[in-house]
Every structure is written in structure tokens, then in C-alpha cells.
Image (cartoon, rainbow, N blue to C red; front, side, top):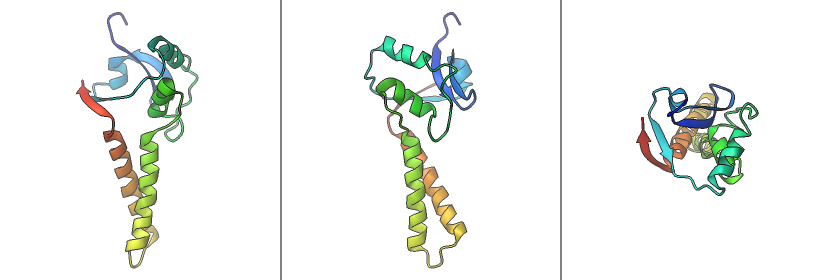
Amino acid sequence: HQGKRMLISATKRNGTVMEETWDEVTQGQKVVLSKLHCHNDVSGSLEKARSQIGVWRYSVYKRNCEHFIYWVLSDKLRSKQVIGGVSGAVLGAIGVVTLSKKPSVLKVLGGAWAGLSSGVILAKASNKTRKKS
């Protein structure tokens, strides 16, 4: 991997944390970088991230890539996308129940799905800086 940019990341593709080249992780997709503050020194953060190689068990809801980076940088397990999605789903379902004259299960699920999608999209949009390819 000489001369190649390396990433330590948690991906659904691997099911855990791995250190791979930029090209392996991004697979030719455009990447949007986030503005995040690191509460630890760089070498400590790298050591902490590497400590999870093959250990971290990926879960969309509890231990995804966003959870991983927040944990490495700030010691907190959190995901704005999960919070946004769950909040959006709840608000979407409540909106359908409140505004619909005859709220059916299908309508409530549709409202929840729309809210979930909107919540995730809005959460992804926050903290972004520039695109890299």
C-alpha cells in the first residue's frame, strides 16, 4: 500500500473495522468529508481506531461507520443519521395519524418511511464540507 491513502473504517461490506486503501473503501464513489472535532491527539486516535480492526461488529443502528468515527474522535457512540431517521419516522407517523381523516396502517407506514428517509438525508447534509473523488 506504499504511497496510497489509507482509511480505517467500519463498513457494512466488511462487517467490522478494517484498514484499507482509499480506493478499496470508496470504490470509485464520490466522498463527502465531514467537519468533526477530534478530542484526542492524532496518534491516540489512530491507535484507538486500529484497536477495533476485526473486533468492531457492524450494526446499522448501534455500531455503524458514523458511530465508529464519533467513538474514535470523542469517546461517544452516536449517529446523527440514526437519530434523524428514528425521529423522522416517529414524526412522519404522528403526522399521518394527526392529519389523516382515516389513517390506515399503510398510510402510517408510508408517513414513517417518508419521515425516516427525510431524517437520514437531513442528518447526512449536516457537517459536510467538500467532495473528494
